[in-house]
Each structure stands twice: as C-alpha cells, then as structure tokens.
Length: 227
Image (tube, rainbow, N blue to C red; front, side, top):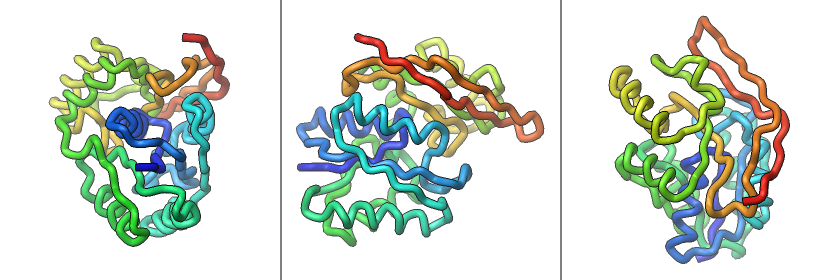
C-alpha cells in the first residue's frame, strides 16, 4: 500500500515507518503535526520541526501542519491533512505501542476516511522493541524527561545498550514503561537505515525545571555526516 507515515521525529514513529517499509509498503508521505501545546495529548513536541530534515534524508515528501494542540481538536487537524491527500494514499502508519487513547483515535480517523491503519509496533513488548531499534541501526537520543528517576543527565544522552540497561532498572523502580510511551521521556532519531546521512547535533540547549523534575534538550543546530 501507499502510506502516509505519522512522524514526530522520535524513535517510535520512525521505527514504525521503517517496519512498514520493510514489510513491503511504500512510504509516500511523511505527515508531522507541530503542536503549540507542549502538553499535547497526541503529538510529540520537542524538536518536531526537525522532521523536515529527517524526511529529506529519507527522500520522502513531508507535510507539516501546525496545531494548537487542544485535546480532541488536534485530531481534526490531522484528519484535514489526510483528507486533502485523498486517493494519493491507501493508509497511514502510526507508532502507537500500548496507548489505547492514541490508537483508538488514529483508527477512527482512518476508518472515517476509508484508509487502512498500519500499526507495526502495536502491543509489542517494550524492552524487546527498544532493543530491536538498536539492533536495526537506530541512533536515538533523549530530548525530554518527565518522570521520577530521570534527571538532567539524561537530556541529550544516547540510547545505547548501557543506557537501555540503566533505563530498564529506573523504569522498574519508578513504574513507567521503559519505552516512554506515557510521556516519561521523548526522543529524537539521529540515524537509521532510512536516512541517507547521519544527523549530528552541532548545538543544543538543555532546559531543566528542578521544581517539576522535568526538562528538555532543544537541538539548535545540526550537521549532516556521511555514513
């Protein structure tokens, strides 16, 4: 099928797109919602603007749509984008793993528009999924944290095997998903098999709020590196 991949810039959405392509589907478009609300119920916010760069490295046309990020209303913005694509696509790809809130809403939009909903990661075991990403050549960094046990030192940290091992222990202690689907942390993909070049962070800014125990890693400038 010709698919539009919903991409936020993070590991789950891009790995879902990669998995769909590996299964034989065509990635016809990247669709990215840029939320003005940092607490969006649906959309990943940190560094989402850089999905344009990721799409260029994948050689896939991208549609970026701003949204106020208001609960439920933000879904109408996605539906409008997909409706405008019309017969150019047969379905959409989502990186949902365990969130019924996210999955049910994406499925409804797909059904309303007569599109297939492809969810390669749905109900996969989180730790195994994270390890699969690393085995498949994904280079991932943490760009936001908002959970007990995840301090400022995690911001900008690369998710290698050592980090995953430590993250597993922290997630078990503080009872959150190791893959962070509940918003405990956000990520950004610097490289993967879909990219023609690797993204290097040339300049970034850490922002930490000690009161809430949360923070973000904003990528200010990037460079491209040949593989």
